[in-house]
Image 1 (tube, rainbow, N blue to C red):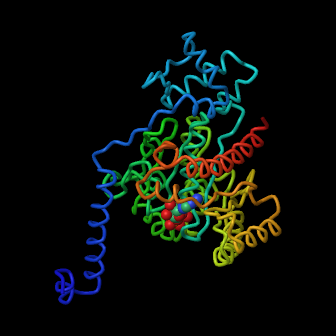
Image 2 (cartoon, rainbow, N blue to C red):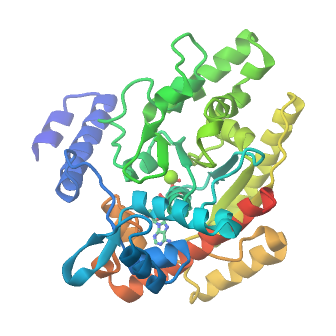
Amino acid sequence: MNVIDRHIKKTSTSAHITQRAEALSARLRAVGERAFPPTAQKTLRSFSSGEVAEIVGVSDGYLRQLSIDGLGPMPDLGNGGRRSYSLEQINELRQYLASVRPKEATRFFPRRRNDEKLQVITVANFKGGSAKTTTSLYLAQGLALQGYRVLAIDLDPQASLSAMFGYQPEFDVAENATLYGAIRYDDQRVTMKDVIRPTYFTGISIVPGNLELMEFEHQTPRFMLQKRGRPEDLFFRRVAGAIAQVEDDFDVVVVDCPPQLGFLTMGALNAATGMIVTVHPQMVDVASMSQFLLMTSDLVSIIEEAGGRLDYDFLRFLVTRHDPRDVPEQEIVGLMRDVFGSDVMAATAWKSTAIANAGLTKQSLYELTRGAVGRSTYDRAMESINAVNQEVVELLNEVWQR
Ligand SMILES: Nc1ncnc2c1ncn2[C@@H]1O[C@H](COP(=O)(O)OP(=O)(O)OP(=O)(O)O)[C@@H](O)[C@H]1O
Ligand SMILES: [Mg+2]
């Protein structure tokens, strides 16, 4: 009998569970700390000139000429004269290119203009593990690399998205530091600016999550019973209201939803201008998605009856963790395309051990180099991620009528 088992004999069920939880948490922390010590500040790597050429959409030769001519940002020179750029420099380069090629300004520097509205993309599905967080992460990072100003909102009390950005929900996120702080009902409410933090990934700010978010699920029924407050204070308008406070600072907001259809998710559905439903192509997942859609449509009608309006610019299904060689998966994707037509994104997120492994050490493939992963594995995963992100960019452009 080990120490824990012996101790449990004497305690109640709740103490038993608490103890198991603490033991597991301690062990996981130890594993995590070996991979990524909490004192380590996350920093973003630099990008080779070849990568930059690809990201920005010019030739490597042209970039070399710019640096020889002393135009635009000056890259770091490494071994053998290899040029590399930080993401800040990539953004400077974008601005430079937009200024010397004004006809292509939007392509190089795609930030929204004043007459273009902020887009809020909500990534949802109540099926756990359908890759909501992974999709949100790669989308936020992909958009930031393209030069957009991105706000990532972690609405999941489990806070996996925050952890990917180096904020550990138990240690780094204090009270009133999640979105709950900005949408709570009592006088402890803070502003949205108070809960937004910078990240190591230039161009991305985050509202981190932790268990405190659950408070919103508990407090909302109480608030509704009291039936007080103005219509704009209604529970489902609060997320949108908080986002509106910082509207001018961002181009795109990406909201990672928890795997439940609670009040937080309803708030996100109401705040959204576009929605992505992530689906792992397995029969059980597709069956549960039909439940999800029925429940969502019920929720949407509740919101609409209460005077809310949901008018999405787009709603898309994204096939995730997809193995295109797997025949049953092919059939399910076929079924989805049959039923939902062009609502299913053409690009699918392929299953990749590189993505899964990077996730284990709280990293994304954008943070790793080809060399660290293996060229063909990296390229294959990136091809699929870039295709998904590119399709979302096209949706944004359509909304902005570019
Ligand atoms: N394309 C992919 N290839 C391989 N593994 C993936 C891929 N996308 C996601 N995963 C892995 O699948 C698991 C679930 O993904 P993720 O956490 O993004 O799902 P989720 O929908 O956010 O889950 P939850 O409902 O718990 O919030 C993670 O371990 C992640 O690393
Ligand atoms: Mg998640």
